[in-house]
Length: 329
Image 1 (cartoon, one colour):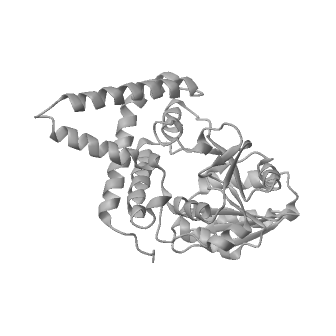
Image 2 (cartoon, one colour):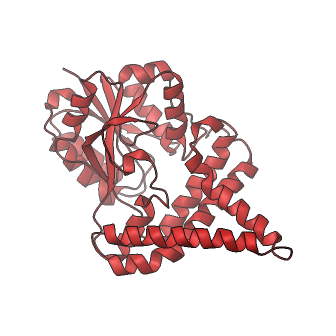
Image 3 (tube, one colour):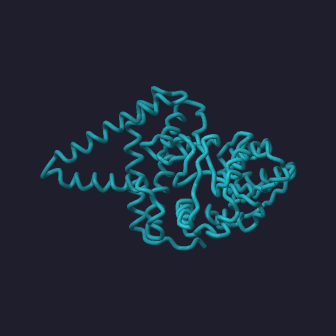
């Protein structure tokens, strides 16, 4: 019987954590197969209290841990050191999962795979504006190009989110790099691939992810993601796929063509025309796929896509200029 170590590292997640822990209680796997490792990253809300209450009512072992350094990589390492399971999985505090989520992961692992996972779908929006922010997370044109966001047939992919790993994978590859704030998974997954492990995508496995609900939150996240790609390029440049660098190349091209504008206009006009066509195409596609707020989604996205691309790309360039990341104190 395979024992699962279920990890949650949370900071100020009181609004969403209880729902995820409720999903964990509802799992169809035998409770004897579970242990939960709940890591509080020095939260200032009720996150720690929610974890303590859950530990009192859970029918399986719950380990309450602390992450005073607050960064996610540090918190995951705290949990990995305390984990005793044969397989390890981590979900974000704002994620949700169906009751057969862990069982389907176990079924895939039992087929001889070392790392398994499935689709991560944007949670259904509560209103039209949330449909817009959801599209910013899920569109292929704006951060949703990773294979686990786009479904498809069972296959090996380059990365997964909310994946289940055999314990031996971490035993061989080691801990997360605590110098990295947003890109710890990119680095870890590169090291796993380099060690010969493969990521198996199973379309039967599904979980949900809640997008940032405000434009400010979205832009802050995109800037941070881009910035840490730049910082990580000085540590582990091979851990990124070409898609991660496209926004930075877009910003550089835009700057270069603007500087050339007094001499020649057609290169800039050509790029903007091609970009505009893609912009409208993916805005229309996202609007048609939106569960609600289709009109607002179509109106807003043509303006928001370029803003997100520029913010993300500028973040990457600033990260590159900031130098090599140092260990978090």
